[in-house]
Length: 423
Image (cartoon, rainbow, N blue to C red; front, side):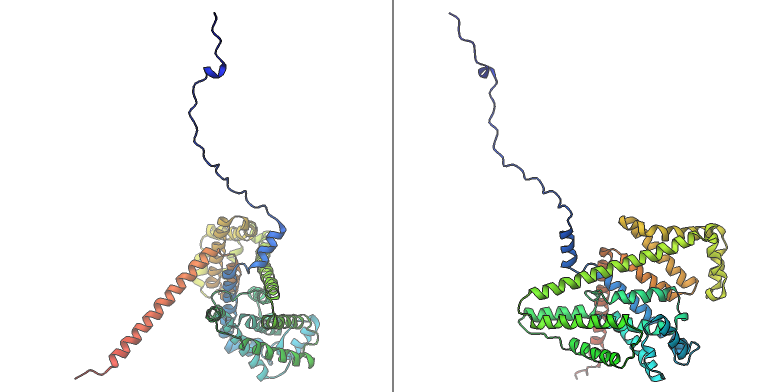
């Protein structure tokens, strides 16, 4: 009798049981870009707080140092009896509609008052005290003095003129400012359940509103419509913000106003970046069209002008080598033309940023243009990386703490040295 054929399953080798394991979760795919997500990020926070603080300090310090250096020559530059006299300035501003508070009243007292306010607002803005108010007064000081004598400025004054307007719309006092320290104290007081009302801010804006209303009613801003309109808009927005902060019964109006402020800040910071790129791009492309820049000799000529030669020895040293002059000439054009395109590559952008800042530092020393260079370096600072600025802030804080500790130690030793000795 034939035995039955084995089944196919019986011929397979035994399979060892496989232990049961939970399936590993794959990482979620990266979130796709969407306009709503980008808008939410722009509205949720004021971006670039460190960059905004740097340009605040840079522009205000540049203007402050200029006003202090030219204090002895202020009459010739902007005074009522200067070479560009009051009548000529009045005629020019009536034609171009430029804003200047110096022409509201005629007299030495008014001129000295405006000049002193320009110095004071620049100092307080650099320290970050009431940055919203001081940024407005800083803009008015820049406009009033520069538009009074338009032929006294240079490229640095033009940069400062434009950036002073943009700075008003930024939240430039979030870090490295007295406003930030006051905000921290307010948060600590509220955490303890204490009330910390801000009385100085509304009082200051109330005074400024009264002054603006008086000037407008007197017709002093006739023909100057843009800046007064901006001032009234800023004043109304600030008054609305304080009213909502104090009277709103729910958090939604505060959240809405904060989101609007963040959007305005981020837009102004973007405009400052675009303005800096436009300055370099136009300067580079205009240089390309010049024959002296094409043959590599353009740098030679300003080095031998008496007006731009505070240190003739340095100019002679730089112009002694034709190779160095050619490299500097072509390098300047390449850096200025290429910089806007390097914003998409962080490493290359940082390298060119260092090169441009170094170039402006050399211009300040060799050509005797310190305030032009400071204004351009302040404009370049908006592109500085945030980690570098954070590290710089930590180093500055540590240095300040060491200096404070050393001062306290000297004071303690001085007091101990004056104590009477016991018998």
